[in-house]
Length: 224
Image 1 (tube, one colour):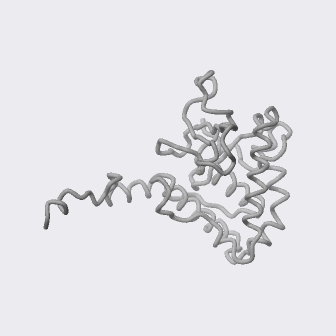
Image 2 (cartoon, one colour):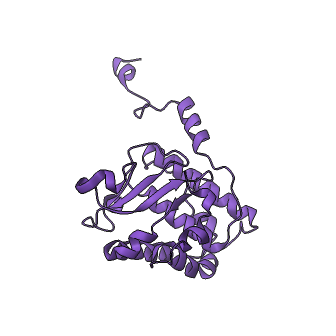
């Protein structure tokens, strides 16, 4: 064996097998329930939006985070200008990394709850950005073939924790489909049944007080 072979680091991220397994155990889905088309699309959209954000920490179930967007960044630019932070808008003050879409938290089933109602009602810029993302999301799912093929999976090119969370999210939604007897559901048919509910309950228009939480995220999901 040469000295070059000795010096080469086979594990540049510093993640050995045991830590990886421990992290996956902590981030694998639990308490997965059956979900209808609108709820499943909402969870898929909100979760993929959060997972698209820059994140420099390991998310913990139940911990409150805040999702920010720098609207000066291009919609299709690096991470779309989104950033996930533990710091609230009040704590950031004038140094905030963007406009806050709202608090979010990771559930036991590895989907993300996102309370964007107040921000979308008050901020036309955020509303326009999120509406564009919803439209792109729906267009990408308007395809022939099983919905399962469109769900997130483990992608090596993603940052480490985002990679595990994407795999956990995909596993969770596949289990939800199985629990509802819809494992063979077609992506286009799921859109037909759930797209209107996603637009109404998710993020594209201001909602009456409390509707977002009660319609899509029961109060027991809310962290203390």
